Amino acid sequence: MSLSIRTNLASLNAQRNLSSTQTSLESSMSRLSSGYRITRAGDDAAGLAISTKLEAQIRSYNQAARNANDGLSVIQTTEAALNETSNVLSRLRELAMQAASDGIGATERGYVQAEADQLRAEIDRIAAVTKYDGTPLLDGSGTALGFQVGVESDPSGDDRIGFSTLDATAAALGLDASTLDFTTAAGARDALSTLDAALETISRSRADLGAVGNRFQSTIANIQSFAEALSAANSRIRDADVAEETSRLARANILQQAGVAVLAQANQAPQLALKLLGG
Image 1: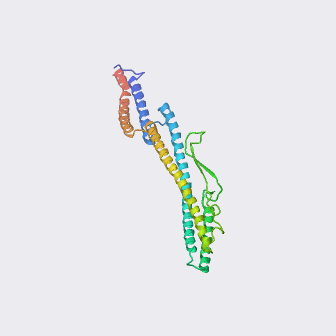
Image 2 (image 1 turned 120 degrees about the vertical axis):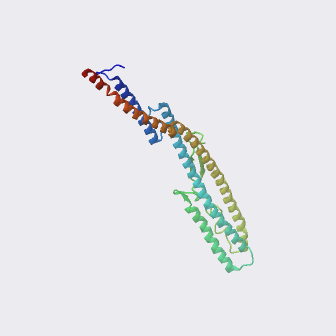
Image 3 (image 1 turned 30 degrees about the horizontal axis):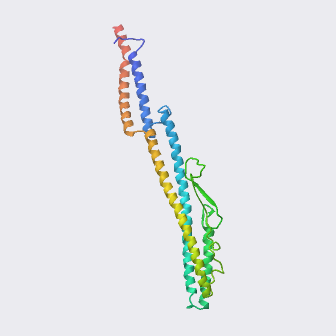
């Protein structure tokens, strides 16, 4: 190899290799610290575009799952309230059976009637206070509720699960002072059929709610499955391979140390040439 004073080719080559090694070192450190294989468009433009689209879809699916969970919560709140109403109706029927018997007198019938009136008022109280996020669920307002569970716009409406609020007031169940007259045995016997019809209405409503609730649960499971699959696909594209990057970092560190040593040695070549001239 020739010696040159003006141009130190060995030093320039060592500097170039050291700069490349430094770039690789910084890249590996960036990937390991961020956890991403793609930290900028220059790393993989196509991969970044696909990953960005996947991340948008994943966030949409996660929100869809939250929407479905909100809908399920509404169903569960309504069903719990109807369960209490059903318990009240069962107690009213028990009282009707007691009052329908001639084994009690007028005074006792008065006590039974007083309890029945309070229970009828309790049914209206349950209907009035059962709300979700301020929306009445049992007062008969008939509010149509819809929950977006699809991530794409669907004109057919298949991307939404909807249902209407119910009317579980005493009046809607056919319960008033005349139909719940327990002051006579005949009135109590007539009340039995009214209470049976009310219990049937509540049971039918609970069955309908259960069907919608099962749909929500199935939808949540499907959404979570889709989101998991998309997350796995995005991970394969975007996330760094820690083992691979650790190996690259170790290799870059070794090359950097060797490069610094070679550069120092290459920078001594012009001095050697000067010594030859001076010698």
